[in-house]
Structures are given as C-alpha cells and as structure tokens.
Amino acid sequence: MKKILSTTIVLGLIFISLSSKAQSNKCATMTILNERIEKDPAILLRMQQSEIETQKWISANRSAKKTQVLVSIPVVVHVLYNNPTQNISTAQIQSQIDILNDDFGLFNSDSLDNSHPFWQYTADTEIEFCLATRDPNGNATSGITRTYTDSLSFIGDGNEKYTATGGEDNWDPTKYLNIWVCDLSASGGTLGYAAFPSDLVSDPDEDGVVINYTAFGDIGTATAPNDLGRTGTHEVGHWLNLSHIWGDTICGDDFVADTEIAEDANYGCPTFPHNANSTCGSGVNGEMYMNYMDYVDDYCMVMFTFDQGTRMQSALNGDRAGLLTSLGCSSPSTINEVLLENTFNIYPNPSNGNFIINAQLTKNENVSITLYNLVGAKIQQFDNVNNYPFLMSLNDLPNGSYFIKFNSGNNTITKKVFVSK
Ligand SMILES: [Zn+2]
Image (cartoon, rainbow, N blue to C red; front, top):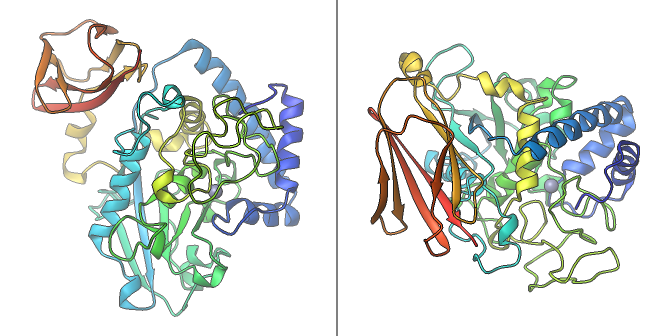
C-alpha cells in the first residue's frame, strides 16, 4: 500500500525501511542492500533518484491507462555446481522459466478465484521470459552456462557472480536477466537475493538474481515448501523494482498503491482474511499475504497487482530499458523474421467484459481474432481486423477465463483474458 505520494515523504520512507532490521533470511535482498549502503551511502541517493523517476513514470502512465507493451526478457541461467546433484537438469531450469511466465502472465493455475475480494487487483504484468537463444556475441545459445566450482557452498556475498571467485561472470546485464543457481546453504537459510534496477549503472557486474538450487523450479532438487518456483518469481520481482509487501518495517510502505498495507512479513499460509482492520490500517479484507512479494510458502503466494505490474513496467522503461531492445530472445538465424512478427496487447485485463486490443503490425497480413472458452470451444470470431484500438465486448459472457487467439499469416499468438463483473 502506498500511503503518501509526497516525494519528500517517500524518500524518508525509503530511509526508514532500509534502516529496519531484517525480518528473515528467506530472502536476503534487503539485508545485502543495507550492508552495501552502510559501506557506500551513495547507493541510497541513487535509489532515491530512481524512485523519483519511477513515481513520475507511474503517475504519467497509470493515469493515462496506456497500453503496456508485452516485454520479453531473455534469461541466462548460470548453474554453479560442486557435485552432480547441484548440476540441475535443463528440464528443471525450463520449469522455472515456465513458472515465471505463468506467474507474471497470470497463467498460474492457482490464481485467486474471481469471487475473492483481492481478485480485482490481480494482474497480468505483460512481462514474459525466454531462455536466451542468442548470446551477447550474436551466437546461438541454450541460455544456460554450467560451471564446476570448488566452493562447497556460497554465502550470498557476490562470489557467485565472478569467474575469479568460483562463480561465473554475468552476461551484459542491460540485455539479459542473469540468474545464478547454486548451493546457498552456507548463507544461513537464504533462498535467494536480487539486485535492484537502480544498481545497474553503478554495479553492473553484480546485477542479477541468485537462487538456492533447492528452491529453483518445481522438479528435480526443488524441495518443499519452496518447490513451486516462487522464490524465482519473488526475486525477479525485486529485480524489476518491487519491494516486500510490508515495506521491510512495521506497517511499512512498498510504494505500490493497490497492495493492502501489511504489518509485517507473513509466513506459512495464513487464513483469509488475515490481520483485518489492523492498527496499520488494513481494511476488512486484511493483508494481501498471497502476494508474491510476501514471505508465505510457495503454494500460498499467487498474485501480482496492477500497480506492481505498472511499477515493473516503469523499471523496464527506466533503468532496465536496455532489455526493450535486447535480441536475446531471437534466434541468430532468423532475427529479421522474428523482429517482423506482429504483436498484440489486451487491456484492461481482467475487465468487466470490454477489452481493448492494440496491435503493432509489422507485416501487412489479414488479422483474425478468435475467442475461445477454457475448454477450447470457439465462441466468437472477427476476421480482417485492421483498425486499432479494436474494442471487443464480452458483456454477455459469464465471469471467468477465456482465450483470445490472434492469427496473422503464419503467426499465432494466444492470450488469456478474464471477465470479472
Ligand atoms: Zn525479497
């Protein structure tokens, strides 16, 4: 919950939140940030400047309800192993990429029911991920590096990020999301940690996300209760400038307007409503403990909000804008073709039944738009759609999930939408 919009107060709150005691070792992002700020106070100043730019972008774009452009982020996974178990399978790596796409795209099968009071805030962030297919030199890649390390376990001090200290140097962090997967058991229980966007310019070699190999993906070495890949979702949320839902201090601020204020971190899986009408000011529905940026168990965290999505889009239009022009998700041999594909965006989503569709058409091809229900039955089809924005009214449909398929030439794109009246 964003409590106050005043820039001065916002900056004060950043300082307060960074001064608070770390709540847990589960995610070490803020602990590590605090340690770095103690050594170099200029980091805090850069965060404050970045926050001013973030708030400017959000106020300009949120009020205008502009279409968010679907962004594909290329991911390189650096596997660091001291024994064969830590050298996790490609299938396990792909499972984490799939989970990121499910969670950021609201394709997760465990999302809130549309009768839940917080369903109205649940969002498709318009952010997707691919295992990189093109490396920084333009060559084909699997998007995975595998490095034997003498280190029995890393402690979360950054050694994972450098070849010289038993890790692996990151790829150009302005063009790729670097994820290191390694043994973090010596760190005291840390599942992962991330660098914030405001660190990118000053500490590019440190940019990326580190995740314990037992909390990565949902197969292989993934271990309950951290075995649904939500550590990845949470840490990539930080990497795209999201804070913890409780603002890392009692009744703190996460600079997001539509997340309920939370008193503190939540663990396990509380019962809804949790901590309703708290002294912090949570409403009758209590805290949004099921948000990916809380500390609940993997199976319990199921949502990002619209304003969290906007904040992440702000990062992609600010400190992380280099990703918008990355070719990392393109195949080296077919780059020109890939860049010429048509793209489509739908907003708002969920909606009361009126969806607006925008397109970036790079090919002059007839576009057909077809609506399907969840079991694949065709409900409605529009052919030769060539005027955008295109309004698609689904007012007569019952609440629930639907698929919209776009066909243009050989290009087919399917998106999930939600009707919630
Ligand atoms: Zn965290």
